[in-house]
Structure formats: C-alpha cells, structure tokens
Length: 207
Picture 1 (cartoon, rainbow, N blue to C red):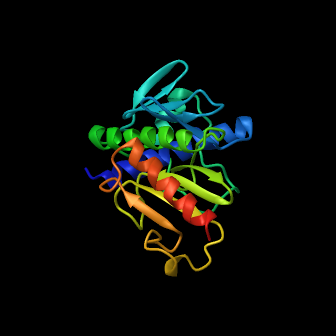
Picture 2 (cartoon, rainbow, N blue to C red):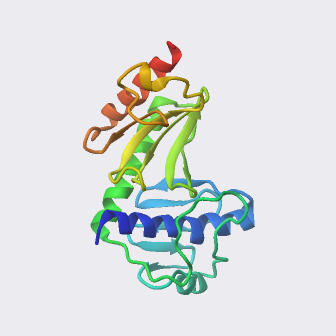
C-alpha cells in the first residue's frame, strides 16, 4: 500500500469521523496533532496509528467508515457548506491504512507542530480537514506542513503568503506558485524546518 492511499484514508477519517461530527456538535472544524496521530479540539475522538479512538472504545480502521461511526455513535459526515475541497472519501468506502505510512505521516505532523510552535510561540497550529494540512497564519502568510497532495507526492513544509506579488522573480527560495515548499527529503529535523520558516519570513519582511 502506498503513502498516497494511507494519506487519503486518514484525510477521510479526519473529515468524516472527526471534523464533521465536531462541527455539528461544537461549531468548529479545527483538529489538533496528538501523540499517535490527530484528533478533535472539542470532540473526544482521535486517530492513534491505524485505529480510531473514542471515549468508550477503539477500532482498527479497516471497514467502511459508516460501520465504525455506528459502533462509536458518531454523527458521521463532512462539515457541509464550509468548503468545496475535501478527501473524496465516502462513508461506505472500505479504506485501509498502512501502519508504516501512518507512522510517517503522524511523525511529520508532530515535527511540524513542534517547529511551528517554536517559530511562532503565540500561535496554535491547526490541522484543517479541507486540505489535511497543519498550519498557522502570521503576518498574512500561512506557514505549515502537509503530508503530501495531488501536486507534491511527499510530505512537505510550506510558506504561502496571501499577497504573492512577484515572488517567482525575487529569490530562488520561492519555488512554487503559492510561495515555497521543501519536502521531507530536504527537511528532516525540527531545526531545519524552523530555519525554512524563518527564511521565508525574513524575505517577506524585507520586500
């Protein structure tokens, strides 16, 4: 099983079993990084490796999501009306999660969470269910990490200013239309990720 399949499966769980139910009950879609994966900020449901954990139990994520939701008494489904993108996973879809890929993704999120908190101590990183990325917004710029997507296969860190201007012609740091990114092959430590965020901020402040 590829990391892409596991990433899509985890994205679906985040959106359908945590963010959507949490929004309907508590009015927020914000998720947070947890030691074994991620979970709700208000709803006591989380992913630990390849299992869904709730107040009264846990289950391996290997069956249609509606079966898990029924067992956990979760009001499953996306947070309708808030965004147009999403995981593309349906509740009747049988998904599988590769434990090694899940560990890689959760480790990347934990690394990003530590780096973002060090980079901007006054801000709290949020894992958003729309694109399944962890980010903060500082001075009209988004700094974050993604487990990968349709454009970048590998997990990556990014700097995405709202006002892109002519970034492509200013400095080789900016290597994407949305700003800049570095993959897990380029950034493997908390320090190197912090330095990447700091370099982007310095360039933006000096424009």
